[in-house]
Length: 380
Image (cartoon, rainbow, N blue to C red; front, top):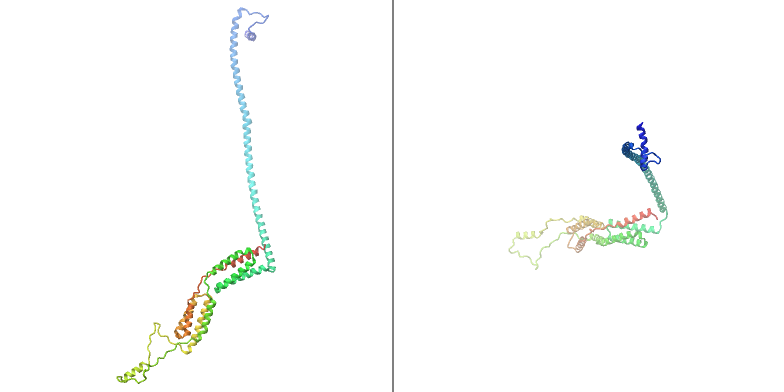
């Protein structure tokens, strides 16, 4: 009970002390005999006040730590959880984007395939329509009567073809030049710039032909023809008779010192003539009935020389003239003026060389045909 009363009195004393240590007015003064117990209670109060301060500090620390823990938990719950949810949402969004991109790629590839197929189909239809259109226009153009320009182009094509034939088959340089000049004149009258390349090729071919050595084939042919007319009048080679030596004074020979045997031998030796021949040996003369065969063979050789002249066959031409000359020297009388004149003509013809490098003159014709095909395919 005393302890309870003491405890009850402690607040009163504490209050009085807090009030400045002044006793309450109208209160009773403490008795002197009670001062020692009051000092002990003050010490207890101070000890209790110190323990309560540490307790308050400890409670405050616990409250602060709880507050920090609760703040951290709130941060984790609010921010970190929110970040994880955002990360999960981003991953989900990325997966959806990948799926969407895959579907877009598939749709795009299928669309490209369909587009390529449709484009190829439309392109084939377009080409077919263009082909039909061109065929129809060409048919209409072919059915239409040719104009003056078409006739002139056809004439140019004909002249160029004839020029090629003259040069390749007959090797006629002069005739080829005339044909090319005629074709160039027609193209100049047309005054068409699209045919400028054809005229350029014709000019180039004319320049090449002008560098070729030109022969008077017609004159040479006529010369050989004239030789054929002289064949039948050539004299054949006959044996020559050598007469006996006559005595200049006309008197009888002196028989003094000569025997009958010596005179007989002299008479017999005068009947024979000894001659020297070349290494070829003795060539017998023709019989009278063989002269006609010689004339025919000589004419055939001259005609073969004419054919070789027209074909520009140099080897056959010279071979024919060489055979003709050999027959003349072997079977004809070379002392005759007609034979010598014919031999000199043959020698002059043998000096001519027919071989010549001829240029190509088909470029202009091919270019003209190419231009004609382009015009037929593109009437505009």
